[in-house]
Length: 292
Image 1 (cartoon, rainbow, N blue to C red):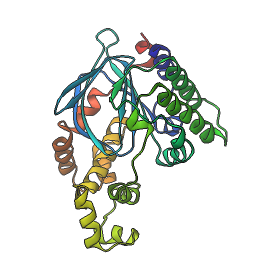
Image 2 (image 1 turned 180 degrees about the horizontal axis):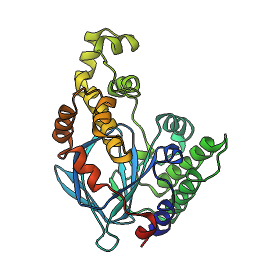
Image 3 (image 1 turned 90 degrees about the vertical axis):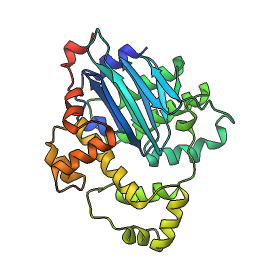
Image 4 (image 1 turned 90 degrees about the horizontal axis):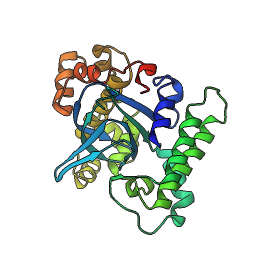
């Protein structure tokens, strides 16, 4: 059931404004690529459409083939490897991030109706209803027309998709959400502009806390303000490298680095490869030739 969705996605501008609605993204890699510790600030559904994706964990490797869905909960760092399909010549995956506002409204409305137990397995095979609701969501998000109701309709289709996973009893880390922690509260402030010269004192004041109190609360979550800021900057860097044609120097500036070489070193230290190497591997094939 994944082939029609892939065919549909290959016909549209994957960097256009429609793909920003509902935080949707199609990723293609024409070369095998391994990325270490990619940060996921929000819960994210990944649908493998072509090739193979490996989720690299301390307890082994999860292999995800076309048609597999991957549920990644908020706050995780995930290492993965994408292997291109030998016939098509590329890997393709669709990602759908759970917009925090959408997730909050979903929880408020449906939490009492959700099954008491959901499968925590991160990789699963969706049933026919899940595929149907995903197809409906993709069609809505990618409609060429524009209307003031687009975002409301997209959220409605997204809710149907999340409910379909709950009905099947899968995707626990997507369908349910833990209470907001202090890491997420800090991210809410710095995430919109990670390049800014953020100081812990400033963010603590916005949270109506002293700097010492915020430091203690983050320590209880096994993190620090500096680590959260670094994560936010690398998250922005990963997106800009993979989804925009901006030169590395401009991306470095957008992520708070005055030196492109220091930015490249930080990117390689975090993800295991340079921005140029990742961008080269992610260069998409022409859509018509890739349809396969």
